[in-house]
Image (cartoon, rainbow, N blue to C red):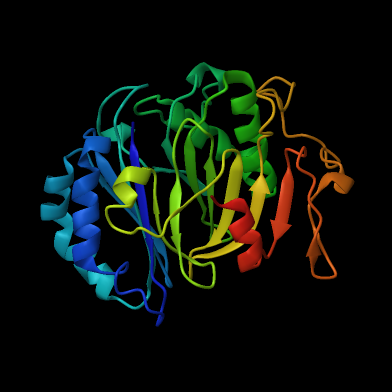
Length: 302
């Protein structure tokens, strides 16, 4: 099982217990049991983003890049740092298999397992480890997919993988073009968040027991839900119910079909805000709340 942890800079808010280099180092070291097949980090700042990854242990990573991480934390322009420890289950164990995977538009991290043969290989991608995550990253960064609406593209492929395999886990995807993070969870993996009083994210973890060692105020993202996050401040911009909680089978069409037509979702089944109220259709596998309030968020977390 891989490990994913993320930290968001609250920019002037009281987040000294979250955006602190000692806390980050301690958390990364506690995550070592989540995978020792390489570690990577995605850094998002005002000016740009970049990825640092290496086929070494967590301790070696902190020794090698510790000063760089300290400088990032002390730099006011740094907005978010997300770490991934790999514990290989599918694909080659090498430097090329270390997350995250970087494509033309999307940067992808994954904790979980699914049948990689559900997604074809594509000639344009230079496969290094041929893991399930790498195939997903290659799919999302196909030339014909990067032109699609990102919410639609991510929801569609995630629901189709789960409908045919019954597994997915945790997906963390950064859209370089629009500067948003997408985080999705299915029930074979945990994803917990620490939120501030306004419902903004301080930290994310993919292990509840480890998370409560650092903070008792954590909430679980429910199965099948995906968050759209502004990495500038940790704001949850949208909440989606991507996968129907009552049935494994969500979409019946073959996995490698092209994207669905524009009318692929029935507008009357979308959760939307009207006159300050939120209408809820529990059976809809593609519910969405735009600009959720703190109360909306609390309904979805547990």
